[in-house]
Image 1: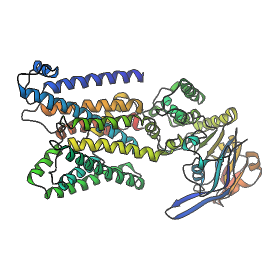
Image 2: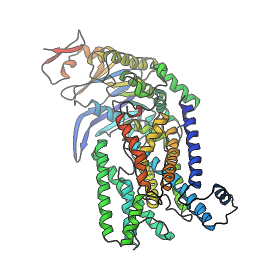
Image 3: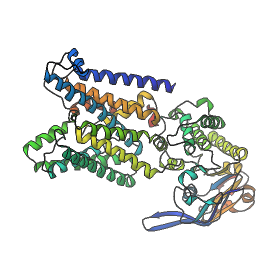
Image 4: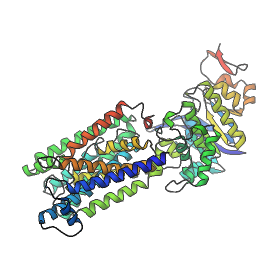
Amino acid sequence: MALLTTQDLAVGYRTGKRTTTLLSGLNLTLAAGRLVALLGQNGAGKSTLLRAITCATRPLNGSIMVDGKDVQTMTQTERSRLIGLVSTDRIQAGGLTATELVALGRQPHTGFLGRLSDDDREMVSQAIARVGMKHKAHEHMAGLSDGERQKVMIARALAQATPIIVLDEPTAFLDVASRIETMQLLSALAHEQGKAVLLSSHDVSQSLLMADDLWLITASRQVVTGTTEQILRSDTMNHLFTSQAIKFNPQILDYQSV
Amino acid sequence: MDRRRYVIVMAFLGAALLLLAVACLLLGSVKIPAGSVIDILTGHGSDNRAWEIIVLQSRLPMIATAALAGAALSVSGLLLQTTFNNPLAGPSILGVSTGAGLGVAIIMLATGGTVGSVFGQSVGSYVATLLGALAGAGVVLVVLIGMSAIVKSSTMLLIVGILVSYLASSVISLLNSLATEEGIHNYVAWGFGTFSGVSVEQMPVYASIIVLALMGSALMVKPLNALLLGTRYAENLGVNTHRTRNLLLLITGVLTAVVTAFCGPIGFLGLVVPHIARLTLNTSNHTRLLPATMLCGAVTALLCSLLSVVGRHGIIPINAITPIIGVPIILYIIVNRRKIQYFN
């Protein structure tokens, strides 16, 4: 079931009066229960596309529809109940415990003063348990490793109880064990809880192993989408990078030098 | 665990507030026996008319002024630190106090008065002074908002604040060259900082503005916590970050301007007290941090106020005391940056 669709979407950025279009004519579909990886070289427009989808910036053209409604016309609270975000932005929350941080995810659902009901508390502790951080629920964020912090941030998005979760490079800065654990967690969330999970990544092999669908931004700024099997059967992986020095090897699901 | 710590800290601060208030009633440059102070407070009066005036019209208003000013400046500091995501932000460092001071100076000169505190003025005049302070603080805050969009680095923003401060100070000095000798004297006295500038008649205005603004800040706890994650996350959590920031800066401006107009530009409290509250509570959660900052600010200001009257020769300026309390704490925080949780 398509949760999010884009119609003739164009994204880029405005500096003063000049607009730079990075990607245009995008008709993308994000379905429930699927883990989607967005791949492309640096500067291809991955973050810009994700920023548009999470309404951090306005699209240059076209629209983004969730449940048949244009996100631009929604209130901020409506949007915050539909799309959860995990970014690589530095946060100043070392003085919050993991539980307090995850509880922030309930903000779109709580009242003016943000008081948590028993149901809210229950959802917070379930989210923490789901990402495997129950044993550190009452520790401060400052005391957690990068991988643990990332899990808590994902738990925060879970507590937000949105049908869509968007993650901007969730595995950047993580060691290989944390990278694999994070990808497994995200895959499980898509499949068990029916969430649409969209993530950008530079980790090609893990993305190809774990993702159900791929959104690829080629070197010529075309966006190619398909299931991972379809993509692997095509030659698209060889058009992602401008560099002529590398070639995709389907055996190892990664690039190697020519 | 954290909850118990909060209760203990708040109880301790409450007791300290009470004790310091009592001490401020009993101690002062004029010695008044404790029995007489109690008689005066309970309405039995005293044979010494001067003592009555000192207790009811000097010491009592001074306690209320100090406690409210401390709470106001500390909450201002906390809101600025969270809004600009900068642990070293504060109303005096970012130039908000100096901006308010400049507003005061301009109004005093324009109305033909002398640059100084609002002490002893007619009602119309101190309202004008207050509005001048609000306008001055507002201009500085607008400059800071504009600059924070251009300079992303929080260190640079601090430097901008310091520069704005210098600029406002030099304009104040230039204005002073037009002032009378008495005006300059008053201005210098005002610059020292004092908690005895609010008369009994002015107290309702002073107190009600501060209490209202503090209540306003308490309503902002939910978006303040979201802002700990930065603007992008806060927006994803449904916070209108532009409106929230403007509201927070409005509250900050009002609190700082009122205190500055009545008490002078008081340094360090706004910067230091939020850190004391965070360190003792071990949290950045504004649900607990904001009330603790208020109470801790009131306690710290009362302590400064008490120290200011124990000198042998009259009253010591508040701004001579706040750095002695503030600087060691800031140095401790800078040195231990890596070990302090809320920085990481």
